[in-house]
Length: 125
View 1: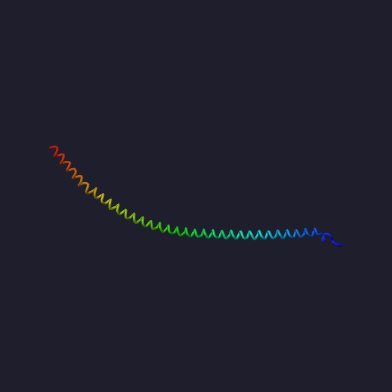
View 2: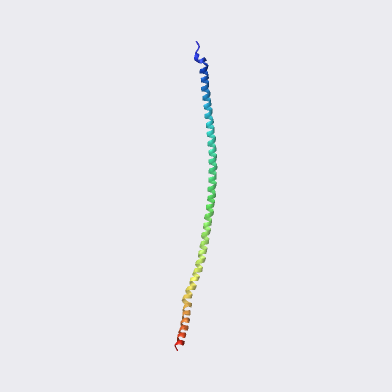
C-alpha cells in the first residue's frame, strides 16, 4: 500500500511553496543585513569625517589661542612700556608744577602786589 499523502501533488506543491517562502525570506533577511551593514559603514565613514573635521578645527583653535596668548603678552609689554613712559612724563610735569607754585608764584605775587601798592600810593597823594 502506498501512502497517498506522499503522492498528493497538492501536498508536494505546498511543501515546495513553504521551502520557496523560507528561501525567499532568508534571502530578504540577508539583503536587509547587507543593507544595514552598508548603512552602518557609511555612517561610520561620515562620523570619521566629522571627527576628523572637528579635530582639525580644534587644532586650528589651539593655534589661534596660542597666537592670542602671544599677542596678549606683547600687548602687556607695550602697555607696561607706555605706562612707564607716561609715569615719567607725569612725574616731570608734577615737578615743574611744584617748582612753579613754590618758586615762581611768590615772585609773581610780590610783583603784582608791589604794582598795586604803587598804584594805590600814587592815587592817594
